[in-house]
Amino acid sequence: MKKALLPLLFAVLLLSGCQAGPEGPSGPAVEPPAQALDPPRQDDPSPPSAGGGTDDGGFQKEMSVNHPFRLNAACRTGGGYYLQNEGYIYYMEADTGRMILLCGKPECGHENHETCNAWANTKFLTFYDGKLWYTNMDAMHDSILTLCAMDPDGSNHRDVQALMTPQDMQGWYRANYEPMLWNGEIYFVLRDNRVCKNRLGGDPRDNVTLLEPDTGQMLEWDWKFWADGGSAYVMCRYMDADGLSKAVLYLLGDSAGETRELWRSSRITSRGDEIISYASGSKFSFTITGGHLYYLADGGFWDADLKTGGEKRLAGVSGGQALFTDERMFLYSAAGRAVTVYGLNGERGGDVSLAPIYETYGDISSCDPAFADGDLVYLLCYRGGYLSAVSSLFRIDTATGEIRELSDWPAANREPPTQDDREIVAGAEY
Image (tube, rainbow, N blue to C red; front, side):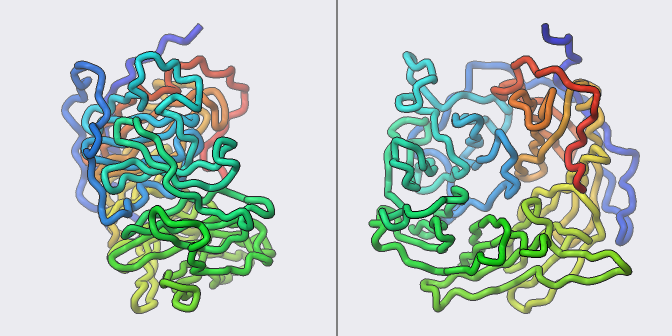
């Protein structure tokens, strides 16, 4: 039987005053709300109608580059978000947090992947040109990486274009890297790690190779596309042959000859017997905005000016995972059970304690920051076991200190497995 739980809605008070950061005094204190109230439950939310939503030049800056397990795709449109959980797409209202499965078929039991509108087992979601875009590489597409689209209400699924030729299918595909839509073109990575682009709706035989990296000395790697202003980028985060985590950023041109390396985290410094590498592998969180690369890595919060090549440490921080917006970095600390706000100038703002979450649920084993938007941070907490299918999604308002559990999150109403006696701390590797 499920345990009786404390009410799932509560306000959290900030730590008294903002603590001074390692590099200087903190920002202004953040006042807690007087009271957190349940939003009124009206009719079930409705997904946007066809043609609704917003997009920005064909590229939505990633709300998260972490892609947490069980919520590894999210994008924003109009008044809400699209989220992916267990292969199904949900629409969530931004104001209320209410969610709906993106399938309006009254006769659908949501079990047949070929007929359910909500099914799209993908790590890539973006809104562009009035449509929701995703990729598939399943048996129905003969394991060929395919760009697909649907209407905002989940209807009218269609294949837009294959991104591979039969020759590109040779060999083992290590990962389905998320592509990028930008200025009417699709950027993607093939099986042999060639970075390519093509026009939307183009033939895969017309793929243009932009980069052919040498991955022979890499033990593992992943790719992330980005666009800022008039420039397109791709970041390769990898582990080298010595087991050190590295990252390299390329500025993409219109051909391989025009693509160039722009930044590399290869410099390593020695402090006594301790080796410090300025990258953090798969946990290497970053954003690119205004011609600057902002990133969290071992040793601190960093700013790299991509025009001048200058680089500086904005704040001395240790551990944790980060989410970025165009204005802020949100640092999540598993050990401290808190979220700390930093401006992109390195100034430290307030801390929000996550202790009430753990007081409400005694079976939380780990948490992952999912995505951020404005002052809001969304935290996915696994219950009963590490990366458990049973989880709770929390919305943390860092401006007011309010924490709200989103009760419509589909994995929240399942029976968690029995937790063993060992405590599992999220981010323990930090």
